[in-house]
Length: 120
Image (cartoon, rainbow, N blue to C red; front, side, top):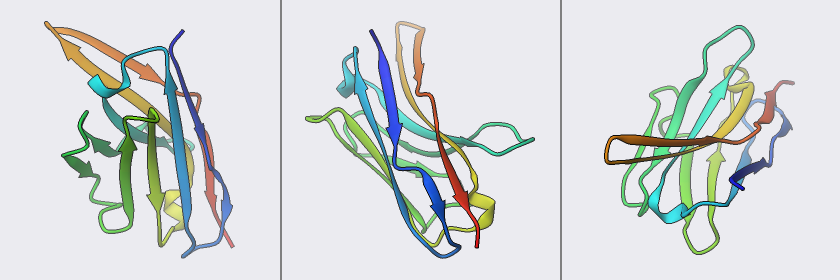
């Protein structure tokens, strides 16, 4: 059974930091690119950060560049998102996502999400 379980969300003041973690099981984690998405109330889900299957390549949304860092540990089947200098606009539900494309077949899995609230 495929599972992606996020943790680490919560309430933080502007300028603060949080570290989100996602633990994967039920699939070959090291084959998958991993992503963090977020969705704020009334807005579409947006891609925040991506990391390639080997961890050698990362990408970030312009809105989080220089503040967020994505990392993974293929031995532990985990992907983390370190978030610094948080702003109220970062408030959203954050989702872990796994993506693999093989022979034109797309394999995509989602976690249940974890709430991040940035407020004073």
